[in-house]
Amino acid sequence: MLQALFGQVAITEAVRAECAAKLGKDAQAIVDAIAAGWMEVRSARAFGTQTLSPSLGAGESASIRLALEQPRDSLLILDDRIARRYALKAGLAVVGTVRLLDIAQRRGLIDEAAAVIERMPDMGYRISALLLAHIRT
Image: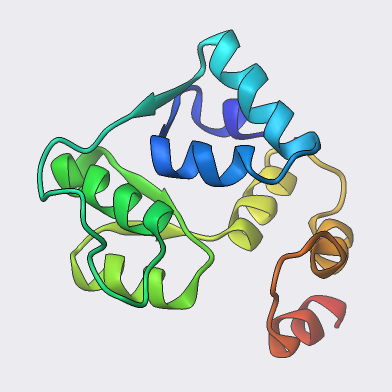
């Protein structure tokens, strides 16, 4: 879906490592996307390597640092509320998984975003009860 929506996608080494640590379909999909060439692993050259905030994980910090290098050409995919808030304060464009699923449905890439979103908590994603209630109405 990401390739269909964006063509080329960049992730940081920290994000790749976090995803690879969770053996399964998602980890293999990332390996396959990197091998296919439409996803690439990039390192942020600026802003150091430390976490930007104690509340942010290594993947979120590295991704925000990378986006800060080219803020006009970057769209961060972040679901963590604190990371989203930090990125928005820094003037970066942010989208979440739920919004991506909505866009994918509107473009005909998936049949029903709501059905996927309702299953996300079963796959380990944290979705607010308010958002789930909104989707179900």
